[in-house]
Image (cartoon, rainbow over the protein chains, first blue to last red):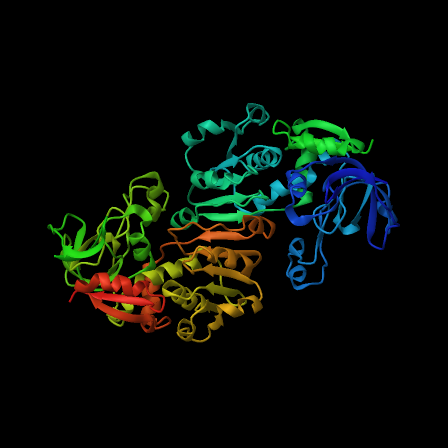
Length: 317
Length: 317
């Protein structure tokens, strides 16, 4: 079984072991995987992870302890909680302190010919959703998470700061609520990818924009938080979607004086994301800028690190 | 008219000018003023303020464009908004970008024999509230602000990190909601001031405390934010009450991963604070650790900067 593995010396494609499925588990054959900024941060040392990389995917169930899943096209939630600790029982399983996380923490990821997940993490993909769209389910769900945490709708002004991989999806999801959304980037190519009615704003013109009700920080850069702070109105909300290997130094005085709410936002609802893909409300496929075979996985990671690229896909052959 | 003035060279007691009241304004004779951590930060250069210091007070209206106020014992809200800009019209006058703030920004403060405020900022003090309690109205209102921003009640666990001047009030207000409140300090004397049912926790024992639903950061120290982050549960709330002349460097990755909400919190409802004082639900008077005359105002500021002291009061003679 070939896999793209992060080892202490760096990522490389190698042969990994396999084993039969346990009770409650599925073995999933990879159809497409997507490279995420988190994968690139892991390579820089974030989380101290080693193992098979990757957590964005669509695949076909090859084996499962419940035979009804076999042959189904699926996407999978990435958090594997214990489901018995106080945090799980309080209804926050994605924050289980004992959890493993697909390709991020204590669990091999999806950049392999096949990978494992608990059956309860799986969602069948509707027929009308292409593989190229389905591979975006996990990051699209993360974008949908914002609408669970912050009330956003018509009449609200929202700035998405950094319309890279995740920011493009956040802008689309937030525009779908009826809010007036501004997508900010340095790169003209990224701005050109924003569909109507999202307003593209070159980073150089940011100072001309009035302060917004909600600012979503998606730059992936340590300086982004300070810029985002300057763009949110008093009593507005600043959503953090970015984890960083280098810490940021925000102006917390401005947060106190302007009574800003800073909301950390992570994984979101897969069912909602699949619904947006199935209805066509969000089409993420124009964001695919490159494709590689698993065997060329290291090149895929380099390509994803190129600032001109957005989503880089991996397929098993 | 004698006043404690912050000048570029530092604070000193000097004679200041006076003028008749304008329309909609009151001249208030100081009865008691309270020194706040913000006053000490202003002296260190925060906000670049110069002028008469002080914003916590109780006084008697000496002159007013509306004679009904004359002779009344009052406390005053500190923000003086324009009441006509978009922020004011959107219902956020305390965030008016054109506002002046009593003794903090573009407006002389209360550490003087007399001071001015718009009539609409004044609240009459109920007879059952002593001068020594009424002088706490402004910081107690700031503590009450938390309960407007975060839902706190029975069943919630709340940690107040740093039970100094403001933390003592926050702990009392939060305990009044029925929440289980833990007050944390290094100093035994500060812990001993916490009334039941607040649980005193020495800072050295903080690691033994389970993570809380809400953590209120009141340390006034740059390192407090990192400690507070470690004490809040996933999807919990971290309230920032502290402004600092030295910036903090929080672990924003933890906020994203644990989906923590960080809420900046500033000025609050005077009517609620006066209600808590009038009913006796909160008695702040044990927090008074020193008293000075206005003429010894510089010594009062030094005394307030002494870590063993809590509230230092100033009276005109």
